[in-house]
Image 1 (cartoon, rainbow, N blue to C red):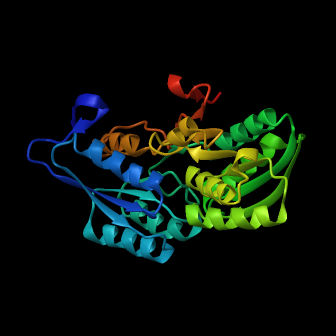
Image 2 (cartoon, rainbow, N blue to C red; image 1 turned 60 degrees about the horizontal axis):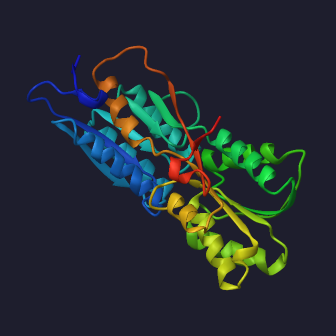
Length: 299
């Protein structure tokens, strides 16, 4: 067992070195850049621990190959944030069955062939967003839903939770599109929505870049003041900043889990027993009314 260290991180025995392989599905989203930064910062607190980062550049086949490279190089532990669930399931299962601990971060894979999943509850966040939006609009109005990648579990859960949250209200999803988590795609889809709908009340985007892209599309045609924009991620430099500027009505936090991934990696590598298979992270909602107080925890 490793000796106890500071900040809930273990410490490696003197002279011992270990390598964590981190497979990030893409770095085109600010939230994912922040995740890597959080992992790097946490790992720097553990002398002798090295994290090797690989960026799959939004290419599932590339990410599969990178995971296999990590397996072949004999890393001590894998952290994977998958682009898509089904295609990444086999290489992750292969690593797990070969005795390499695997932490699946943010997006789930199929089955249970991994050591631990860490992430917030996307369905719960979508549900909270739906209920908040229904209340904010008084139960009626037209909504544009700009979805994240719908072959990923967060996109699916943020959609299904949201639909459950507005069920029974008079809200109508007048336009929906998969913007694949990307701001430029969200802007294009919002341009299409505005071209066919003259009375959009609110945009629910599965991430803050999507909400911001929709805002820019509305601003380009002078309609941004008549539409509310709600997103998910809640990064200080992004979603929270947009709320403070009045561009977003609300941003629901999706913590990166980077610090928690390294913390639990050290526990796993240290042989600690009884760790949970799934670690759910808390989430908050940021609005103009509560942002100066640090947001409000979802109940």
